[in-house]
Image 1 (cartoon, rainbow, N blue to C red):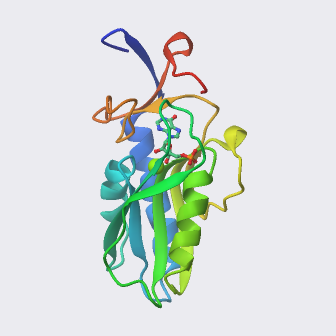
Image 2 (spheres, rainbow, N blue to C red; image 1 turned 180 degrees about the horizontal axis):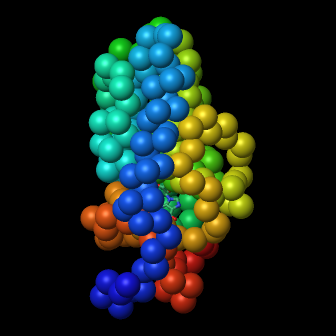
Amino acid sequence: MAAGRTEIRCLFSAETIAKRVQELAIEITTAYANQPPPLLIGALKGSWIFMADLVRQIKLPICCDFVKLSSYGAGSTTTGQIKMQLDMTLPTKGQHLLIVEDIIDTGLSTDWLIRHLRGKQPASVRVCALLDKPSRRRVPVTIDYLGFTIPDHFIVGYGIDWAEQHRELPYIGYIAEGDAPHGK
Ligand code: IMP
Ligand code: MG
């Protein structure tokens, strides 16, 4: 499928995503059934559509908050220096925190966020990620609930962007080889 001059190929259809999100929600519902429900922390912006779908399938009375991190430097390859642009506001002391991520790529953002949240005296910190690109990992990250493991493609759609474009696509796609950003 072409959007302008960029060729985007479908990796997971809307139907495939919906089925996997429902499975993840059941896993999370079961895991927290006998303890206080988790506080979901969405990592903006890429996780917002995933989180919106996930939260409506989890059968627990959960609260939601958001953080926004960015890597210093221009371009599509992270420099590894994380900056917090928006921190969460709900109280975290003694809470079970569940990070909701779009993609875990190098792992640097999620590793930074886990450390940041552990400093807020929570009962636990776990990670739910829609996509995992293990071939690009620079620091290890434990993913407790994972949607899909993917090869080293540059992903767009279902909330995920390339230079703020393509978030609105209902499917998860990847940029065709020749068009993909450098470093991916
Ligand atoms: P990290 O390299 O694991 O720190 O990933 C940081 C963030 O970069 C992810 O949470 C995504 O928001 C973004 N990112 C990583 N890979 C892609 C991609 O293929 N497409 C769009 N954004 C990406
Ligand atoms: Mg992200």
